[in-house]
Amino acid sequence: MENLKVLDRTIGLVNNIQDRKGKFRVIIKAKAGFMTVVDCMETDVYHVFRAYKKGAIQTIQFQPDEEGFDFWMTVFAMKGKKVVIADATLLSQITVGDINQTWYNTNLYSQAQYSSVNATNWGHKAFVQNEE
Image (cartoon, rainbow, N blue to C red):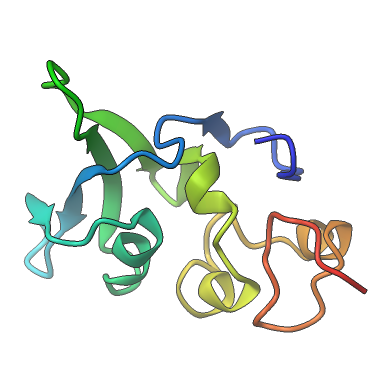
């Protein structure tokens, strides 16, 4: 978590995944307007994050594959159009292109954030320092 650089202090940083294996589930807003829960076959939070269309993801939860661990931890959460919780593992993988294509109307989008990590193209990481 120490190599992350997040300027927006309204995003609550968590470190629940910590390179552990586990299961993910997503709470999404369906096209019909109601919320539903989807258990994911994917084992990487970044792929879960990228799997849904704009505006669908409300929450991503994680359950590690550890003995006696039978509860879910929130690793990404939205409140309206603002991201309020994000895991360090996810933020370290998000690119400028991910944000500009799908998350541009949220508090993840920030030119100041991009500048602070030397991000100059869509392939650069948005929250980890990029080489000049």
